[in-house]
Length: 130
Image 1 (spheres, rainbow, N blue to C red):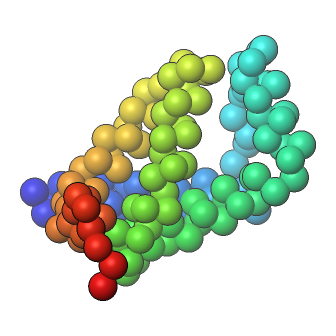
Image 2: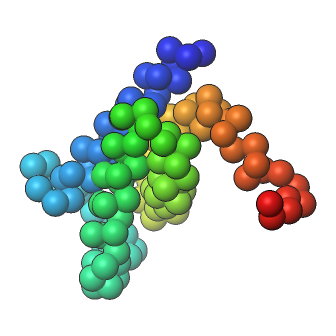
């Protein structure tokens, strides 16, 4: 399982690091956005002004954590809302990218499962402050 987890961690880290970096350097063409609700939704996020820079910094930092192997659980926590957002966006608004969203979700689950001991305190029912 450790080799599978390592490959999943590196792939997930690469995905987020590259696309996070692309948000600042524009070396990849922007994806096609489907007509209708997805365009309206993305336009609203862009109009907010802060959303995409914060998203890309989060992707860049989280991806770097996964690639480096340092603070992997923290990187997973940072990227979890992004993964949920990607999955819901493609499930509800733009099913054309659902395959890639599914790959990202599976990679996230594999890596999180391999680091599950790091999350024991977070999953403790009725936890008390120290």
